[in-house]
Image 1: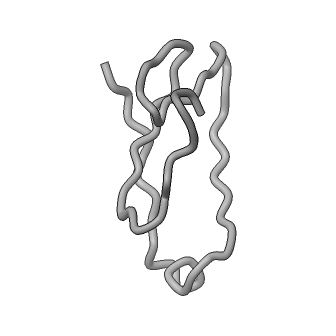
Image 2: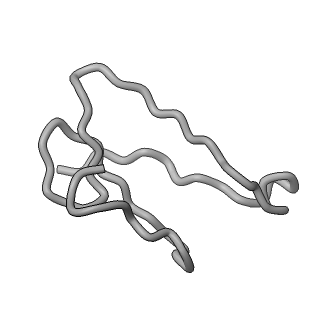
Length: 62
């Protein structure tokens, strides 16, 4: 990720990520014109297996 370092995800309920060729936010991820998203969980908890945890939709921000 861009910025000064990695985001600290400890005790965080929500994380906004920004995908763009240019950006300034700490949570900005540089992309090319064509890209795809893949979400991978490490050490999943009970909500994943019970299918109660959800990911929000990708939204275009202007």
